[in-house]
Amino acid sequence: MAAAEPTLDPPTEAAPDLAPAPAQPEPILDVAGVSLRFGGVRALTDVSFAVRQGEIFSIIGPNGAGKTSMLNCISGRYRPTEGRIRFDGRDITRLRTSRRAAIGIGRTFQNLALFGHMSVLDNIVVGRHHLLRHGFLSGMLYWWGGAQREEIEHRHAVEEIIDFLEIQHVRKEMAGTLSYGLRKRVELARAVALRPKLILLDEPMAGMNLEEKEDMARFIVDLNVEWGMTVLMIEHDMGVVMDISHRVMVLDFGRRLAEGAPEAVLADPHVRRAYLGEVDEEAPALEAAGA
Ligand SMILES: Nc1ncnc2c1ncn2[C@@H]1O[C@H](COP(=O)(O)OP(=O)(O)OP(=O)(O)O)[C@@H](O)[C@H]1O
Image 1 (spheres, rainbow, N blue to C red):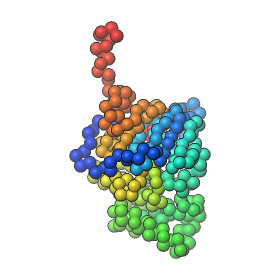
Image 2: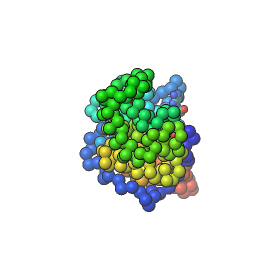
Image 3: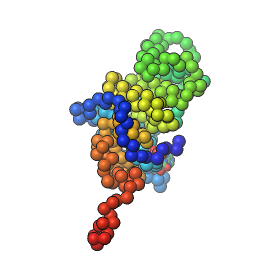
Image 4: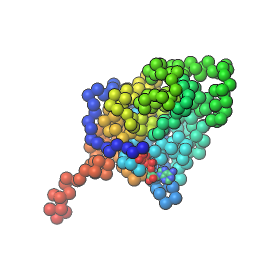
């Protein structure tokens, strides 16, 4: 999906109430020296950062900077060429994707990955089965198999999410018939149905109108504040990033360019030059002075 050009939009006035930045400095996710190569392409080079328990942490950067590659290394879709990743106190660098999901890493995708011919409810239920105990095929068989004991537990958890994300009115609708914004919300519901400790969101606002973005931002903040979910998000909409992130990391050509509080990162001249394409205003003066 073509991503929007980065802008310097200030935070909107209707910024949702953020939880205070977590005082507990202990990282739930610790990425150390991660590099990823595809043949001659260096998608990531020696990237290190840590996400603290209970924070909303955003990764920003130009197209092709390596953001999705980093998310894929954390979710297990890609295995780093070098470096290691620790989650919740254990090394997960070589752990299978399904195991990472089982120990508390959930994710959504840049492009929607819902079953369009199935109801909202069943999309979320199948997502839970798939992640918890079976592969895709057995998950589907379980679904077809009808009511079983665990079904009740799953349904209960699913109904709770449906209430929380305010999609009760479409719970019986086929997912494929919903508006784009609602489908993104259903995808989020499916990802959080497993109650992950850490949720990875790949461009949750992409393709949304302003109202849908505000709703989605509110849900992300509520998941963080009310459910204590740690969020790692890739997002191109800088207004949203500034509004809801506790900390931000900037990637550029696969390298970490900056990291810190949103305002500090945006004020960083390297970030303004590399990411936002701004010219260094001091350069002409230095040249003129013979520097
Ligand atoms: N499976 C792959 N095979 C080969 N090259 C890849 C693969 N995935 C990513 N790349 C390359 O790695 C680099 C980083 O891509 P990545 O998708 O991680 O960037 P991004 O920051 O997420 O970009 P965008 O904002 O456009 O989604 C790019 O040069 C891309 O072409």
